[in-house]
Length: 113
Length: 108
Image (cartoon, rainbow over all chains, first blue to last red; front, side, top):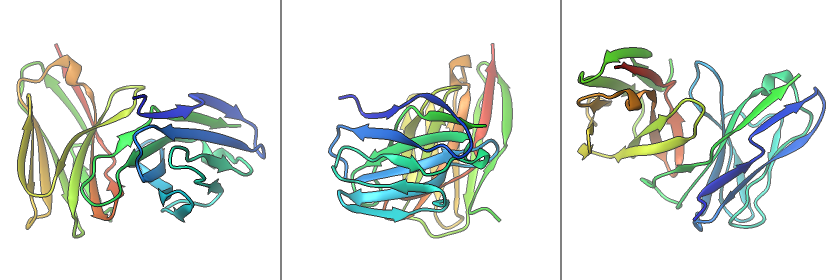
């Protein structure tokens, strides 16, 4: 099993550009989520999904869109990149329900100039 | 006030020392997770606790639900233990709220 994969590993964008961060998992997990990690702060939830066709907002959703057309894939779209979106982004997945181990992808480091 | 507070923020230890990292939270939870993040690397789950104590190798995690407090202990620390240790609480469903992390450096 590849686990949770993310692409790209690193990306530089100019302000106003759009891009999609890819996330895929091969563990048949229902729950998938996107987090951003900023220095001195804990990981913050951007969006999450409890199954194909179902998404919801987390703590910091503004400027990001998600979709979940399959169980395996959960892409995160930046509509118009801003310097405040410079961060490291992690995707995670788990079985749905309480007390389930979450599996994290390797992260995408994004720099917005 | 953050829902999840970790202490210390930074910790430097000599190889072989016993290490304790603390986590306090302010809400009712269904579980508490301890995670490890190596420099430049991904995040891996170490423990998930809803009560009592768990041990894996040199790592021990405890939780006191009544006091809303958990500790992660590392016995006989080694330089390869150097990493960021993150506490996260699960309030309901799968959603986690994270602490800011404790940066641990173990010197040889």
